[in-house]
Amino acid sequence: MTGKYYNELSVGKKIKHTNGRTVTEMDNVMFSMLTMNTQPLHSNEDFASKTQFGQRIVNGIFALGLVTGLTVSELTEGTIVANLGYEKVLHPNPLFHGETVYAESEVLEMRESKSKPNVGIVRLKHWGKKPDGTVVVEFERTVMFLKNMESGK
Image (tube, rainbow, N blue to C red):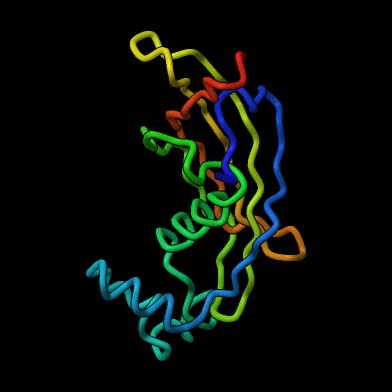
């Protein structure tokens, strides 16, 4: 697996994830409609053109999910049991159709599981950024990571 095991992480470790993703109009409209989010800022160009943004903005929950997904291959692929929670979700700047998002992560806290010797609990902070560094979403999540029991650590 390409993800990291609990014993490969340390508090303060930062990862600038390699993959980025350009968000399309279809991504935004389909996600909004599949989730029954009828907010016209996401789906009605006429309405959105008269707002402070001047155009439709990408659904913030899509951005949250996208950034989480962008971290998988280099952080959690095959090495977690579960996401336990998401906290402190902020959307400081809008994301528009045609813009690209990259993810960055930092390990904030780690602790051994009290009930499961083969896992540890890790609190992560993630940022979704445009290529110029503008943050479009930031959040913390708590994840239950597997330990690499073969490493002896």
